[in-house]
Amino acid sequence: MATSVGLSHIPLLERLSVRVIRVLGCNPGSYTLQGTNTYLVGTGQRKILIDTGNGNVPEYISNLKQALSQFKTSIQEIIVTHWHGDHVGGVKDICQHITPSQIPKVSKFKRISVEDVDISPATYTFVQDQHIFKTEGATLRAILTPGHTEEHMVLYLEEENAVFAGDTILGESSTHFEDLFSYMKSLEKILALKPGVIYPGHGALVPDGVKYINYYISHRNEREKQIIEVLVKSSPKFITSLEIVSQVYQDLVNTLIPAADKNVQNHLQKLLIEGKAEAQKTAMETVWRIVKPKSAI
Image (cartoon, rainbow, N blue to C red):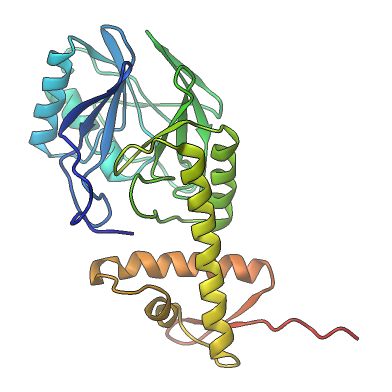
């Protein structure tokens, strides 16, 4: 995790390859880093837009208009990697200020637990895993990668052996997730693609995809090791997830403590499923301790 301070500079508008243009969402913050990366993909006069940033950000809409004018193109359709507001929030503004005469098709995977947020006047087209999107010069394969959210997708750009990773992989710092077990499986799924380049949902472009994914996997494994060490040191006492956060995360800014706590809780749930930790509910919260291996008879 990181704040938007001290990160690499990302231009508001930049051509990253012959078929990929990045337009920064102009919404920097503790969770969005420099801002949401949105991407125009393709080589023709109509391109696919991946993600849309937050709503009510006039600077982003102005920069997107500039990109479309500068590269003499328009929006063929929109793909949303997941339901979070900093990825889907800009759809309404794009419909109102950029494509008012022709509402674009907006595709994503359908949420399972609740309904997707309203994006009227646009409507969703819900696609299935392995769906293929095509535009001039680009073929995108949608791959279901739950963990960050239940319906998260990444998009594999066949012509470049590249992945648009959404929030599963950030260009700088680690991400947060709803379900660690699913998240780790998704990282392995992306790794199997052996991508040369990763275009992340936040942060700078990643030029060595395989090396970076392996780092992400090892980072999560190292974090789990740290959590286990805290539980072992505290045994047989039960402790809270926030107590673990205070020992595992060093120099963490206050705004990121809830996200760190959520990550720790996800690790603890994974350890619970694996029989390595146990939980006890109190009147106020859930507390945790390590499960010591049974001695061999």
